[in-house]
Image (cartoon, rainbow, N blue to C red):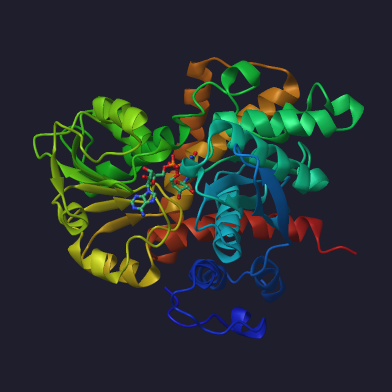
Length: 434
Ligand code: NAD
């Protein structure tokens, strides 16, 4: 993996900063591009997003005061199809992180061979500090501020950290109220991850976790492991973390330790993943869960397990934590949770690191199914969704394994190679306008 600033970034005027998430992300992508001998002009194109949209908008609070919010939508690349990617509500949202996540979306959609490009967006806000009414007004103002920068044929947002099916319902409804007349009834394809009653796809809520389970089905046997009796720990118990834990528990895995923004807990005999999800739904976090022992953050990272799943924020697994983590496999539920320096340590220690663009691609894949159903006025049953998801995930995992073998590289580089091969082919076919 590249250690210094890639030549392309140098050419674009970047100054080397090993802690910068965007540089970390694009450096790793460009390293794969070099292995693949992707033409220099394509590397330049991919090194920067196509559009970076920043908006400021006021929102009325419940006490009749007004607050100004900052929102982002970064559209990285649309060579494969309309831009696609989540909308995050979190107090740390910033342009560089959103840029990084938009790159990962381009890579993810391409790895999955979806006819979609990559984007990401969000608002700098702590959603936990706002009422449902305030979040509704914020979402409607944000959607209005984005205007025609989103649309079912152009850029299709989805839920991410801090947003959910309700957020997507507000977004779609707002868009449909302002859309051109013929999109007023069919415009719900502007976002995915909607509630099933309003054009959502069955299984979208569990899709990211389900995809991760299918990835493990494909990869674990080669590592001499199986889900039955596999011990695991998780960082983050939101959508991705809690669904992954519940689905893995159904397959016989044992949840030993969990950490979220409220605290960390451990129980070696196994934490009941469903009971914990119900508890978190009620209380907002894992802290105080009565059937496990409270532990410190470091204790959670160092709990011995077969499988460690970061499913919260970016860069949480740094060099220190990479030394603490005591696992055989690290599967990235979150986007970019492992810094490059941490990954080197983990690989040296013999840990198999399964990259986010493969592990959490189940979410965007089922989002694609939702968009497809909306456009074709169809409703798939849950079995069809699951079978199609499994097919897509297995094919992507095969591509990654093949690339790792062909280029004798780590899984992250292999995943980027498999994604870039597709992007490169389409650029060659379409050419660069004019
Ligand atoms: P979420 O908001 O549902 O849950 C986030 C979790 O992270 C919560 O449990 C929260 O407590 C925890 N968390 C936040 N800050 C923390 C901190 N400082 N320390 C420990 N834990 C902390 O979000 P989500 O949708 O589950 O997304 C999690 C990650 O997965 C993000 O990286 C997101 O981009 C990625 N992802 C999500 C989806 C999806 O479908 N939701 C799809 C692909 C990737």
